[in-house]
Image (cartoon, rainbow, N blue to C red; front, side, top):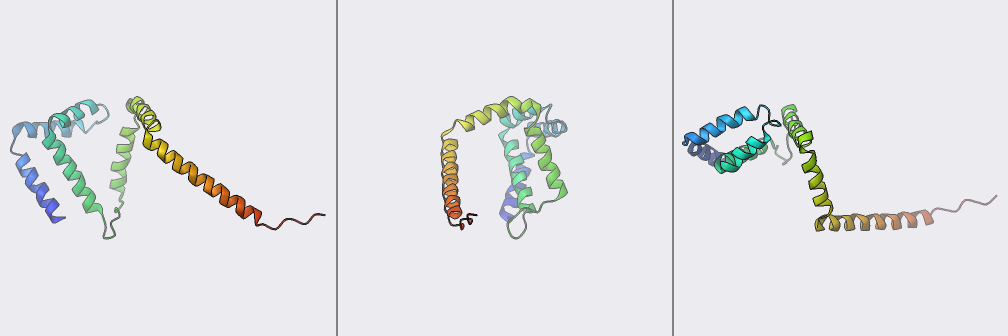
Length: 144
């Protein structure tokens, strides 16, 4: 944990050395005020500035690590849920509808989805067989 914080601090200090990177950071901060409208520009900045993208990823990892309690589960706070809700709203936004549909069909038609479907169907067949065996063990009602 301390190594990660030290690494992120060193990375952040070295990152702040470039004026172009500082401009990207300032622009990114402004763009994140309305991320849905500025999604393409945000993506463009992060693609063209891998150091900034890495910095943000490191920051996210540090914040998640800080939120973990001793048992390794996340300490859910209202602020955490608010952040996650904003991400979900962005992901499910109307602008992403076609991408969501494309992703669904890509996953639906993939080999791993077929593998998972087979496993689920097989488990359902086992459950059905066990249920049928359990029903057979019930005493038959008396005939009147």
